[in-house]
Length: 141
Image (cartoon, rainbow, N blue to C red):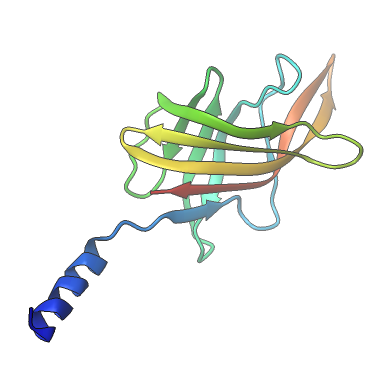
């Protein structure tokens, strides 16, 4: 194979390679999730995400029953995406935030989500515990 043909092949392969994109909870913000129905439940609807340039790029949803919904560039929203594996889940303890990481699959798009979180109690006529995301990072392939 000539050097020119090899160079052309490498350029085509590089242009078509899929690279994971990373999205974050906007800098300096937190996100308050739905009230827990039971201790440690995480249901968060409409988590805003920004790209590496700080541009708001989409939303992420964590539903009960191991479902998720990502609305990101190139990924149309589907509330029936799956959380395919919980890598870890810890609750806040001794002044330290809880953490979690899971893998997801939505219509052939895959990725991971990681977070740190605390429990925030909000009281009105009764008190409810809400997970509050301190960090939230999504990778999408």
